[in-house]
Figure 1: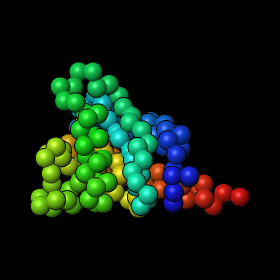
Figure 2: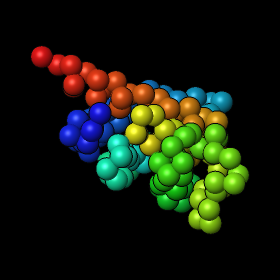
Figure 3: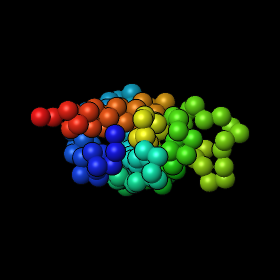
Figure 4: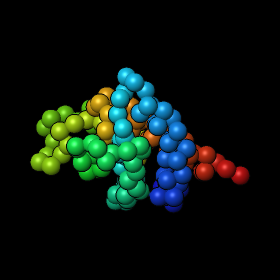
Length: 142
């Protein structure tokens, strides 16, 4: 996979496909959140490429800087090449997010902020797998 296939436009299209189920997740009474932030980058061994920051729902009343937190989570996963919850303490640096909630999948890093840490990581993995699937489809399209 390369950034020739995984472009900012493809990421934006995939986020739009995921928007309805993510909005439905936010609307669940047991979730009870107004919005979430996503940040995506890729690193296929030739340096990191930022592919976009996205907001699902409304973060205007949220007291946390979720967009910044999502980027911190994304950067941690990109640097360590693993999901945030799999990063051991000795790899953490000053400025890293104190919360988990990111995914790493074959060069794709996704950070999510706005839900619980476990739900943030779940959403980050959904997005990473959706992007990988879109790239596989694009690479094998006739």
